Image (cartoon, rainbow, N blue to C red; front, top):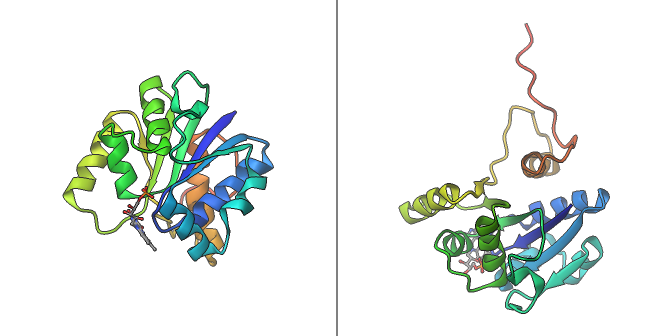
Length: 187
Ligand SMILES: Cc1cc2nc3c(=O)[nH]c(=O)nc-3n(C[C@H](O)[C@H](O)[C@H](O)COP(=O)(O)O)c2cc1C
């Protein structure tokens, strides 16, 4: 399985780090892209540097490298996750504005009918973003906002992060035990 992970400039870089760890554990072929602000927020929020992520992935490309394989839909991948996904990158994808390799690769997923998961992180939502979410969904993307739940009684930030990462893995049909599944209320 080959998956592209894009880290754009929204809060929540920790979700990306956890997801890359889960892919790495499973020997999933992972290609990583970071936007300029994504890289800065990664370091600011988690203390993790772009170079630290190199060991978790198989390849990395600059976000303006349109000569990389990812720029073409002919390059075979199984899917792409943009996590966290900024409203700006959502807008680019929803409007076919392929000005970065991340947006181009995501638009290729839509064009080729491959799985695209956008882990949006913004609140409250303006109407333009809501319309962009609708456009992305209509074009085939999965819009998966970073919204941790509380029914599994999380007690740590890690529990909350794992919930969102588990929901991403669910979309990719990857088995995990990152959160207990709801089995109905007892009694
Ligand atoms: C510390 C920080 C936090 C940010 N958090 C968010 C966020 O949660 N969601 C969002 O859509 N944009 C957020 N932004 C704004 C984006 O980074 C900005 O719109 C940028 O142009 C996104 O570009 P990119 O998608 O190419 O990374 C944040 C910016 C900074 C500096």
